[in-house]
Image (cartoon, rainbow, N blue to C red; front, side, top):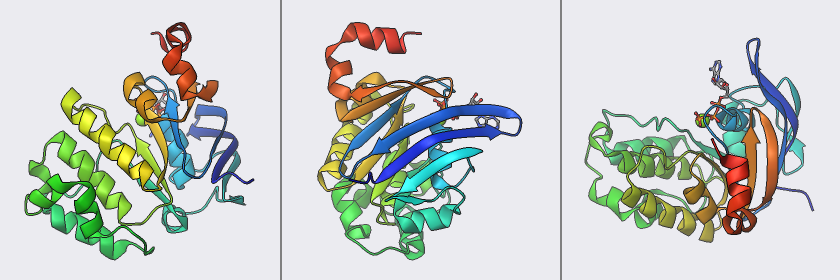
Length: 235
Ligand SMILES: Nc1ncnc2c1ncn2[C@@H]1O[C@H](COP(=O)(O)OP(=O)(O)OP(=O)(O)O)[C@@H](O)[C@H]1O
Ligand SMILES: [Mg+2]
């Protein structure tokens, strides 16, 4: 069976600075797969390479078997991949509803996600619909960023460090919501530094180190083996 997404041996660089050294990974339909690794190991760069925001210097990015490396970000989004960037780029001057409305109008794919559906997933956003984006808390902004990306009805959601900078209670809510998303059939590729968050969600894990894959396997293996976890992720 063809994987939904398969990255084959990609190398990537920013100018002369080489960052990815042969990353390969697969995501099957319905899975939640986590890219786990510390600061600067190449998690975001891997996602940018999938999204067409950075062209890999070599290797292939296969979406349902077709090589999409070199496609524009818009074309990749239209093909069914949604990206939730780590810097949560919402429009600070616009209300929650306006942020969602813009995304809805820009969406080229119809499907189950519209404004009502994302309000159902995130009731807090319905309550806050008239509030300006800039006045939302970090957790609320993260939910809005995810909701906005869902308006494009992606089959695969790339979630870049969703829990970063959020208070533990907020992270707990986000975890629940992400589980719900998965239960509703959204396939997820998650990038995280946080072991707890990623292991609570992921089916499988790839541990990155300095632009390479150091380990891959079921998340359960890392959940159950603290020695392995320490060896792979210790500072
Ligand atoms: N725009 C850029 N120009 C030059 N170098 C960059 C750029 N973006 C990232 N890098 C470098 O590429 C490497 C990988 O960065 P990347 O952002 O992919 O890591 P990351 O795993 O997402 O880290 P973090 O957990 O901090 O988000 C780092 O050494 C980083 O300094
Ligand atoms: Mg990053």
